[in-house]
Image (tube, rainbow, N blue to C red; front, side, top):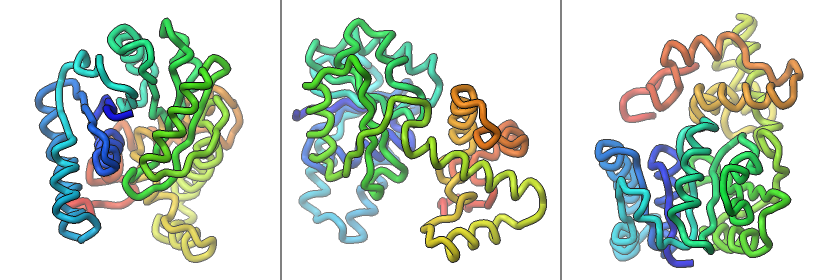
Length: 285
């Protein structure tokens, strides 16, 4: 594998593109508009520049990574890549439409992977004519820092597709785990009930956001509290996953609190909007 396609250059797609480029592979990043493409390019280049400033990459490696980045608005530019990773909005209808198009555009041997954090992979594979080449690769945010990737195969995913997925994960210096093809896979099936429980506790007024986070950080050794983690993931993404999980597993601990729903409705999405359970200045600190 030498040429990797990434569809979407937001927080997750941009992070995936950065890691791919730094790993010595050419990456072709597709965005839906010129404005989104330029914003994505700026985000990835800024992240690479920050790595150079911190000394985590050499000047030579930085320059080489920049040269491996190719930005476009034409999905057809992925016709000759070896492996595609989708990282668009966590909405099933958007992903289904994209995979139908990728299935028609890409070569028969191209692996089509979804970075979905919650949608069962078999439902994505079902919309394609070649379900054997569809697989889930769920990266974690921030992608350059987090070492884990969940690999989610369906009963129809071919052995070659699985092999290539694990090979790419290794080439990106990530650790892969096999996750079940169910809503939320492995990590979010366990994580989302924890996050919504923290939100429910905050909603009750019995504990402050800072006390909840400090309790889990200092008492349980978590590197980040649940409410700041929700802000990092994005309240809208958290809500989408919670709703999908509750649809699949109608249990009380899966149900999104009304506070989460109202905050998303009011545009308080966490770090990406500057306000969530905590406030964030323009520099994202």
